[in-house]
Image (tube, rainbow, N blue to C red; front, side, top):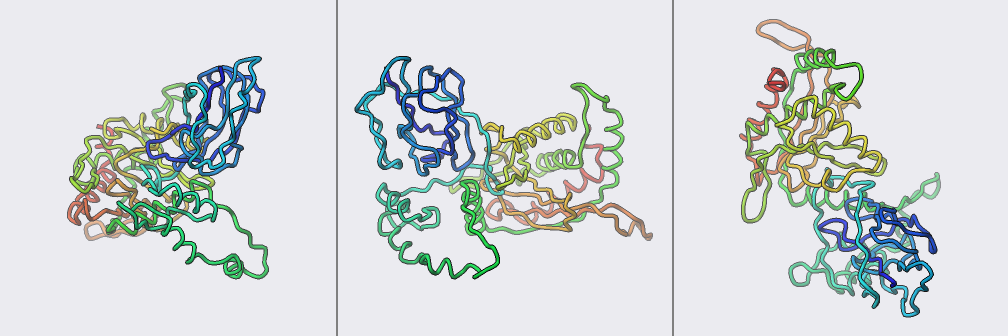
Length: 414
């Protein structure tokens, strides 16, 4: 019996996606567990695995198609020797296509292959609510619905909103005139990840009242402890480890969150959500953006466990092998650009989290200890905070607790 393969919902906020690539061709045998296609959502590029077996009889949505609505038929699976029914048509409007009358849909097991940012994106992306007609016009005219303010009920984007945006949009000639007349410039189309980064960061800066608090932290005691602990590691095997400074700063952040729980919180319209666990999102740079894999319950884990888990998460993030639950969530973020020699910087809050810590490079400099000058390795960290959740005094207390954990690092191993 012919079976529809439907566009799956691969995240709680997904309403449509891009069919990035088919990994099976028409006529190919499909076994349970085979990867059928890659689908690009607002959060990740996902490999979709088939659970049913059969022959891929017909591909209804070609690779590269954007705006494919969830539950739209994308292909037909048939049994060996069975013909594809004649009443199966290719959806004309992939954003609103109705399922064709064949049997039950195929079940999927999604596996993340490339995730989206959070300093963006590591957390739930707001759904764009628009009427079907508005979506169709926007798709035809290449208008980004995320950039439109809806005037319909509950902020819904309707036809007049898209038409108004179209009237304001620059013409092709105007866009061309904005580019240099010569010099080899080129236009690079935005990936879904880049669009989500742009939308989420714009929303964060526009809707969250940020404030920033910086502090200098001496690293010498932490660096000495790191060297001692690494010297204790076996040369190889499952118990081998190599602590990085970032691993220890993850732990220090978690320790500070337990001491100042007001910062380990999220804002909602009705209440402040205080989180019990310190789940630390770690910003990881990718070729086309960034993603924030999460070291969960970092306050309860040893430095060795944090190090091994973080290395595994980062490696799989760059290989595009994270599962959605490994980068969606988190209660606090850190972004470390110290390896680039950055003196200081401020990051953008990653909602619904209340704060993110920007970590700069550690550099040797003169410091005053008592009445004498000394040389110390000092780094500047900046806490970006959502003022709706955290007040200035709480942010200052958190930074003080973080500095104490770093400068007296034995607390990280006790």
